[in-house]
Image (tube, rainbow, N blue to C red; front, side, top):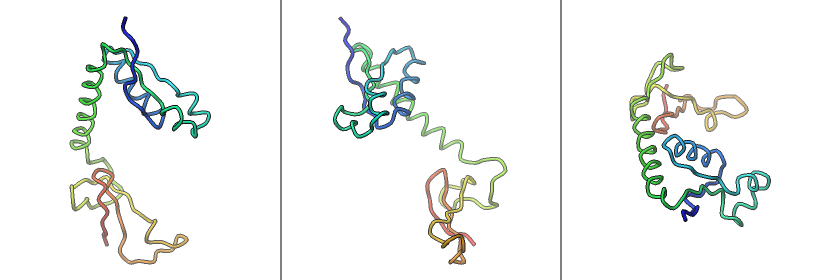
Length: 133
C-alpha cells in the first residue's frame, strides 16, 4: 500500500499551496495538513509541526526533484528579467545594473521631512542599498 508521508513543512499556507500547485501541474498528488488549524490559531504551529505538505511514498523523490528544479528556474528567471519598462528613476543599481528600484525613505526622513541630502535607494532585483544624488 502506498502511504502518505510528510514531505515539507511551511510557516504559511501560501507557500504550501504554491508548492502543491507546482506538484499538481507535474502530475503528483499532494495534500496539505494543518492548514485550517494554523490559520485559525497560528500559535498552534509549533505544537503541530507547522503546515505540512504530504505526498505518497512512491512520489517522494520525484516531488523533491520537481520543486528543486522549480526553485532553480525561478532564480534564473529573476536573473534574466531585472529591468522594467517605464522605471521611476533614470539611473540603475550600481551593483547589478537593474532599473527596478525604490526609494528607501525609512532612514532618511523624520515625519516626512528629509534629513539627509543624499537619497537612499534599494534594488528590487539584488537587494543592494545605495545612495544617489
